[in-house]
Image 1: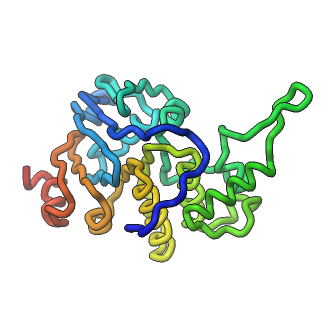
Image 2: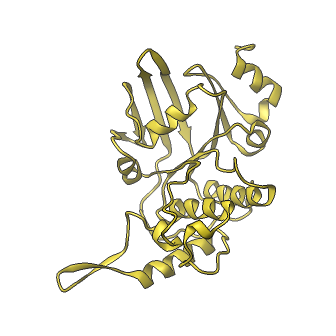
Length: 261
C-alpha cells in the first residue's frame, strides 16, 4: 500500500487542503431504525479505515459525507467551513470525491469522458460552449501517468476495461481535480491480487499527496496494515477509534461484535 513517491500535483482546485473533516452529533434514522446515533469524529490527512459488520452504519456515514443522504441532526465541517450537503454535486464542489463499488462510471463513455464527467473543459465559439476534446484527452493521459496507470488509449470505453483499470479511472478523477477528501467503499472487493496491489498503490499515492482518504472495508487484515487510523462501528455508533499499530485483528473483531467495550 505504501508508495515511495507522491505524484506531481495536477491541475484543478487550488489552495491549501483543509486539515480536518469533523462530524458532530450526526444522526440518521429510517423509520424506526436508527442507522447512525450521535456520531462525533474527526478525520485528518492520511488513511482512515472504517470497519464493522453489516448494519453497523458505515455505508450511511459515507452516504452522508458524499451528499447522497442528508442527516437528521448534526453538523459537518471541512476545515473552517460548515458543509450543507444536499447532493453528490454539493460534496464534489466542496472537495469530497466518492468512489463506490458501482464506481459511478458511464460504461458507454470513454476514459476521458469519465474523468471529466460533469466538469468538462470547454471554450466559447460563435457564442456557444464547445468541448475541448483534445485538451481533455491530453489531460487524461497526463493524469493517468501521474498515478502510474498504464492504459494505452483514453478513447477506449470503460466497459472494455478490467475491474482494476475501472477502479483506477475512478481514482484518477480524484487526482485530477485535487479533491482533498476521497471516500472509498470497498475499493478492492471484487479484484484479484494483482489488481488489488495496483489500486492500493494509487491509494498510497493519494495519501502521500496529503489527502484525507477514508475507506470502508471488510478486509480487516489489509486495513490494519494500511491505515493511519481505524474507526470501529457497531449498531450505528462508533465504539472504538484506534491506532492500527496498537491493536490486532482479534481485538478489532471483539469490538465489532460487542464482546469487548
